[in-house]
Amino acid sequence: MAVKSTLGLEVEFFLIDKNGNITNNADKIIGRARKADANAAIIKEIGEDMLELGSEPSTKVSVSAASLLKNMNIAVKAASQEKTLLLPMATYPAEFVPAMRDSGLYSVKKKIFADKFEIAGRCVGFHLHHALPEGSFDATSKNLKAKLSEKAKRSLVQAYNFSIALDPVLTTFMQSSPFYQGKHLGKDSRMIVYRGGPALGYNEGIYSEQLQEFGELPSYHFNESDLLDTVIARYSAWKKIIRDVAPEAADATNYESLLDTTWNPVKINPHGTIELRGMDMNMPSLLFAISAAVKYIFQEIYENSLQVTPSDEGVADYFKVEKGKLFVPPDEYVRKKLQYLSAYMGMENESVRSYCHAFLGLAKNVMPQQARKLLEPFKEMVEYRHTVSDQIMHHAQKLGYAEGEEITPETARKLVLYQANNFLDDLEHADKLVGKYSNV
Image (tube, rainbow, N blue to C red; front, side):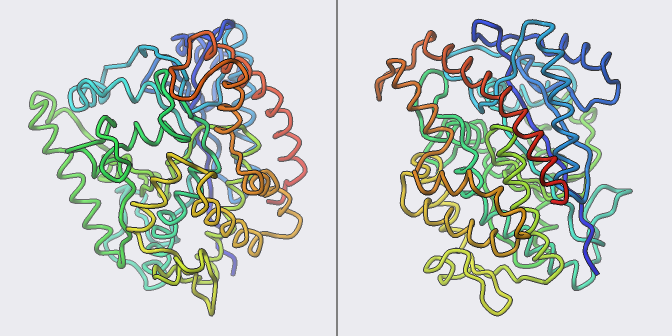
């Protein structure tokens, strides 16, 4: 019997004016969008320069994607009425100071993150939600169940570990942030400044130092008890930080779930999903395509009990499948080597390129034949060693940017206007793709 697991898509956009400058008019755009469609999933984010858009959950990626695209079109129209464009890049290239929201739970984050709080207003991403295995989540308490069936235990751990192993693939294919505050940090500057920490060699990240456990790429878990213990420990640690940093807010800071107090790239979400949070915001057609590929691999884990097996064999032969086992590298290799190389070098690095190529082979083997064409953009990235971040860098160089220098505000404005207009074209392309692959 097929597992009817659901998926959902969630994206964040920067807002720019007609001259290519960041603009802080999210509230006006949300107001216009609500008048057009009161049910549109278009909401506030931590910065007034951002919009968050969501989709209806569905067992079909095409249905979730169609829902997201509908909301994108509503947001585009509402933004145009405010002479504003949506920017499908994960960072704005030039320096700017975001207008941050600091009410409610945001006020607690402001105190905890201190001078790094504004980083959250300079980074946007794409989050892919995939339902947890059936029988593993309690919708009333919004937490993992304390007692699980053997099948649910196995599927939960396999899906969680696979999500961690998958992170360098997703961050590479979806990277769109070669600049941060005027500087070229790496191919995925958003990842570098958002996660930070020793694994990425960057101590100025929002979760660097004492907050690493809340924002780093986590380690594998080998049983559901350890996973649940980690969730509880993180919640307790976060509440302690609130008591230490903002004692006056400790009692008033209520979270609906233990799962609400972590923002790692792989997260068990209080909506009953495994949330893949590591990807940069990017073009809609790429969001749809990567979501489809991930869906079918999760389906193999849930339906056919594909066993995710971390081992050295997973280093010698990335994503090898043999006798019901999917071999992935040990988490130290994923977190300390591939994560770093993905962030700084992307497809230029041969290990990362091989890892991404192997993932495409795995995806091709589990996807229906008619859906495999969706992998073509990623095949081209591997073949030509060229991601969207590389395209942006190449365009910046044509506009006069020289490696090692800071990008000028004028070049940044030209770059973002070009990408914002590309987004409008790709939105039409994505609409056609979703219609063509309506069974995915």
